[in-house]
Length: 487
Image (cartoon, rainbow, N blue to C red; front, side):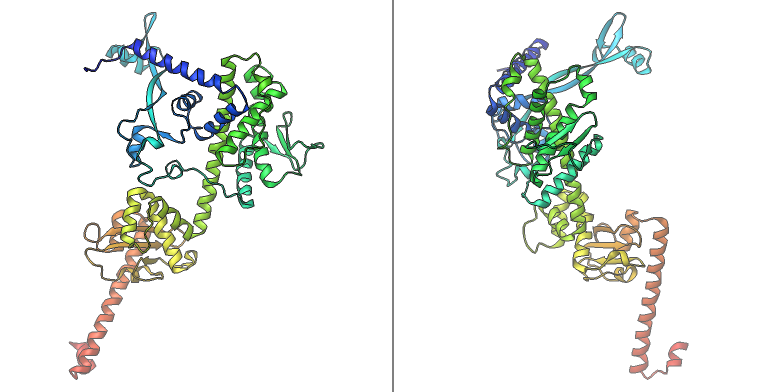
């Protein structure tokens, strides 16, 4: 059957049909506590998508865990299975209009002269947001599982271990959110909280936690109170134009806390959405969409901020522990075989995350040598696989390399970050010194210092070689030493 190009009316009907689906899905969530919790669980996994697209994904693919465009999966080395239908979503498509007399025409319909005048600013322009239909595919619609790729690897999911130390890490992340929102966390509540686990004081823009809470409780309670601080502060109330009643505020804050807690794997059994019945009375679909939009926006912001904080802590931890950094990079590059040669490991890392090569070699250097690199007073270098200790730069560079060899080295210049690189002798350079010059990774001043050290080592080597010849000649041919010198 011949392909029939869709008209503008066809696209409008398709967009309207998707909008109707989204609204049906939205209405279904406000039936009871269980249905809203199911949706919040879903929201915790799709916080990067708009509220409407999240509803569309949920309606078309129940139980979806992770989705991506065809291009995204292809970039991950994953293929969408043959015959799978894409999940339809709205894709923003901004359109620029140019003023023509009393009308506005789309940029693509304007003349070249009008476009030129618009660029120069002599014709007024305005932008409007339209939506077209795009497609994404769920994890199970691809061959990712067959390739041994888990959702957590592809989408950098965080897994809790339930330890006290972890609770402290989350608490630091939440303290960071409070700081960016200019919210003060009080040492003690202003009055007895009784069984209430926390309190937000709008007039002070401050939060207090019940001192009887456990460390784990404080994490989820602080998320709840930060939601109040984000959604129900005086400035936000003015923007909204209405003052929400206490029930409405609790309902929103608890939904945010539930979503964030679910995303990071905190227990959600004790969360109560009992205000649902009261809140839904007299509410139309627009109210419900606005409510979910605010919850989605706030929980998504919290989730991203917490992820950023956790990632920064993990980076600092890995940098402090070379072994952890090595494990992390090998896991990213899917290196599971024991005893794999360094050249092959570097090739794998170059394929998956080339930006990690330097950190990988530097961590190996720290792990293998157990030397404190900050104590070096002159340029020092480790040629990986040649020794298990750092040597003065020129000495480390003064060795014969096989023309088919992959050479990896770590160079330490006092007062600077270590430089770790690798290269192929046949293709790139004769040795580390020449590779450093070719890649221009050091300053001209450092280049000159390395050149002098290399020159001095060459002269020293020649002197040593000459001394060996002298000893052999004088010993085996009975040539007096003074005669050898004169000759």
